[in-house]
Amino acid sequence: MAVLTVAFAGALMLVTHLGISGTGMRDRLVTGLGEGTYLGLYSLLTIVTMGSLIWLFAQAPRTSYFWYPSYELNYVPKVLLWPACVLLVGGFMVRNPTLMGQGALLDDDAGRDAAAQGVNRITRHPFQWSVILWATSHLISNGDRVSVAFFASFLLLSLLGTFSLDAKKARQIGSPWAGYARVTSNWPFAAILRGDNQLRLGELLLPALAGTALYAAMYFGHEWLAGVGIY
Image (cartoon, rainbow, N blue to C red; front, top):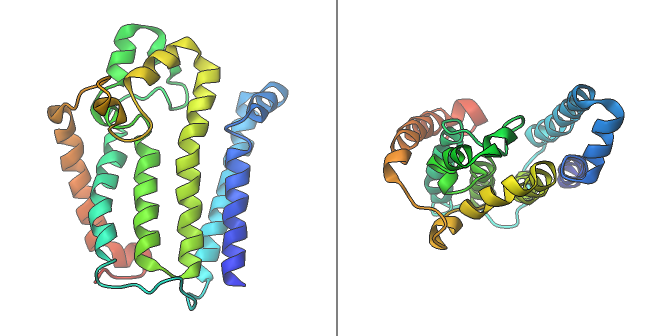
């Protein structure tokens, strides 16, 4: 029952997020309600659905497993959380037209070039991919059905959300977005591999240092954050 409850809460979060913000329904709601009212209601919906999922997960017993945790599997989050932290922190160190109110960055070539720097060279969705790495690593390392349902919800939300966000920005911004999309990529390193962007290690030095500091804080504070120590 706990697994079904968490899975239902996760599905509700997915439907309300992807079914509204990433579709034409958002445009119709903004037209009818106004931008401010829509954002307020949508933020409330996000708090309720995501908060309910997290609360249910915290209360649910973990007694049924798809696979059992092991010392070897526990290395997966230890490895993947470092790039997740770098992407998370680095995403706040560069301007990004995928964020609300930042679409004007693409009005000229200088703005587009500035937006295609730092961790945005790796992926134009650094926050979403940090969540993808976090959710994937914890899904693999835990193995119980409740955790799989919980972390899979966030994995799907962020992964599908990258495509949904791309579609929304293409509708809102138009041809300037197409130019930005050509020099960046959703999938990490894809734009670099196809030759449309370059890896500049100097731009990643500060994100790497700050991300490492965050990783260390999460590593040594995991028991305080999640109630479970790292073995």
